[in-house]
Length: 194
Image 1 (cartoon, rainbow, N blue to C red):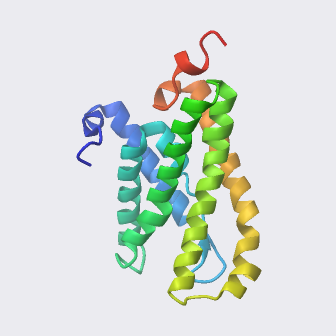
Image 2: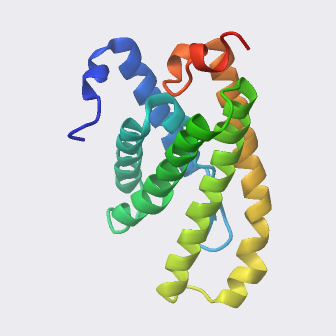
C-alpha cells in the first residue's frame, strides 16, 4: 500500500472503474461450483485486474474482495490471509512476471500481448492457484492425493481453458474498445508502426 498509486483513486472515473472491478471479482469469486464443501472451483479474473491497474492496485483489489467475502461467508476471517495469498498474490505475481518477461524478450506485438498476457497468464495463474490450494488441503489432511487425482486434478484443463478464454476475450475487448483502461497496454509499443 505504501507504494501503490492510491492518488489515482481520487479521480472519479478511475475509482468507479476500480471499485466496479472489485465488485465483478466479488461476484465472480462467489459464483462457484463445488466438488466438496472444501473444494470449490471459480474463475479468478485476477489477471484482468492486474493488466488493468498494475500489480500494486491488483493486490489492493484482491484484499478488498477477500475482506468482502469474509464478511459475506459463514467462515468469517479464518482463512482470509490464505485465500488472499493463494487466490490473489500468486496469480498477480505470475501475471506481472509474464508481462515483464514479454515486454523484455518478446516482440512488441498486439497478438503477443493478448495471447501471452491475456490467455496464457490467466490460464497459468488459475492452475497455480488451484494447485497450491490443493497442496494446502493435502498438508492440512482435508483430503488425500488419491482423491485429488481422481476428483480434482482432472478438472484442471477445463479450468485452464475457461479462465484463459474469458480473460483473453475481456482483455482483447478492453484493448480494442477502451485501451486507456488497461495500464499495461501502450499503443506506441504494441500498435505504432506495426
